[in-house]
View 1 (cartoon, rainbow, N blue to C red):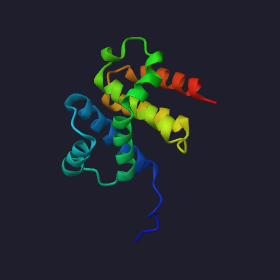
View 2 (view 1 turned 60 degrees about the vertical axis):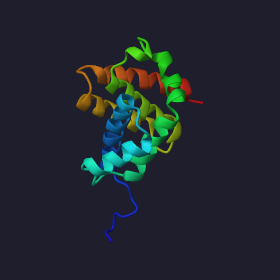
View 3 (view 1 turned 30 degrees about the vertical axis):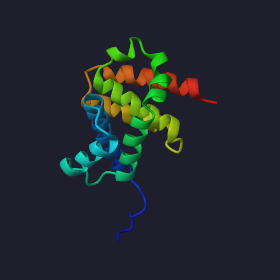
Amino acid sequence: MDATEGKVTPAQRHKARHFALQAVYQWQLTGYSPTEIEKQFLEDQPVQGADLDYFHDLVTGVINNVSELDGIFAPFLSRPLDDLDQVDKALLRVATFELMYRQEVPYRVVINEAIILAKEFAEQDSHKFVNGVLDKVVKANKA
């Protein structure tokens, strides 16, 4: 056993979000069950080094709460939800899930991670769009 066992690093969480974004994207395109998508990812992707418990929570949490999550961020969109790019939609769903259900993660971390993933996977200026929407979600849901 190494000294870091039991402690999840930011890099492990980042990888979990990275794979969760891809899994949610795949779900949006295929409609497969969360179990099937997770199984495919564990078999086909280089998931070592990722926080797999967090990956599981994100994927199942987003899919099981998708209508609620869409309802939280959709009022802040500049266009209809159906017109959103699939990557942007998956990003907003994952980040909104984290903001609503994983309050132990600081909202600045969630938004920053979403921006990083947008720069990696989405269209050129998507990170600005995602940042703006998530910022409004945070402001609207602060008690």
